[in-house]
Image (tube, rainbow, N blue to C red; front, side, top):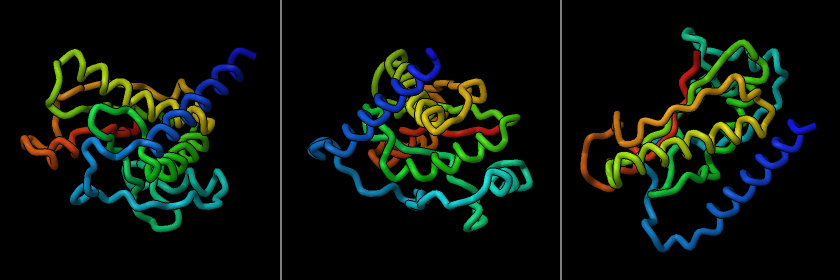
Length: 178
């Protein structure tokens, strides 16, 4: 009974995060799409669980059954935010379908920030970003026991530059399958 309550709470929190992201004023740090950001907006295909579980590359990472391309495993965030971008949700639904069909698989969600802020703050923000992804996956039916969360904060930047474009690439969460 408590498990259903937690799941419902997670869904409500996620809905609030999505609504907050959709209703932001856009005044602070409106950004152009990231260069090289290959996060196409897709809808989850109607695939059976067995089709999704067979949709993996040679390393065992999930691929999009419709396109045959690897699923995007990097999700970007706005400055000082841990809200999932609306365009990330469809791809995360495909990851959730994969994990539900392959319950022996595990995923670690690594959270990152840009270099601005204290080390402690960035570690906490990186964790909130990774947890936002984990909460969404759980709300889609993935078992929490399949998910680990790690925050690297500002460590391990994707782009070592000191520009807004570099910082935008570093504000991310990455899925690493095991």
